Length: 57
Image 1 (cartoon, rainbow, N blue to C red):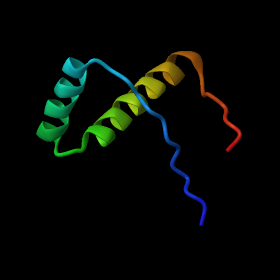
Image 2: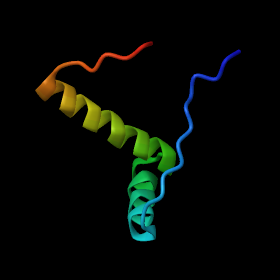
Image 3: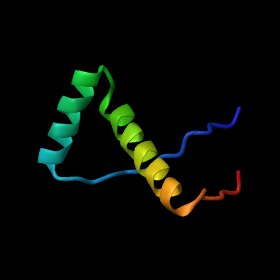
Image 4: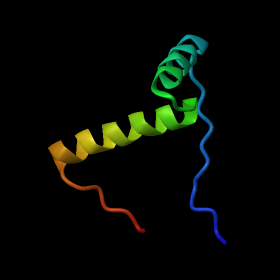
C-alpha cells in the first residue's frame, strides 16, 4: 500500500516551535497536527480569495 503522506523537514526558530507546542497541547493535538491545521487554514483562506488550487491528484 502506498503511503499518501508526504514528508517535509521544516526548520523554524525554537521559540516558534515552543509556542506551536504550547498551542498544540492546549488543543489536544501533536505539534505535527497543529502545523497541519495551520497549513489547511492558510490554504482555505488563499483559495477563498483566489479560487481553488488544482493539483495532479
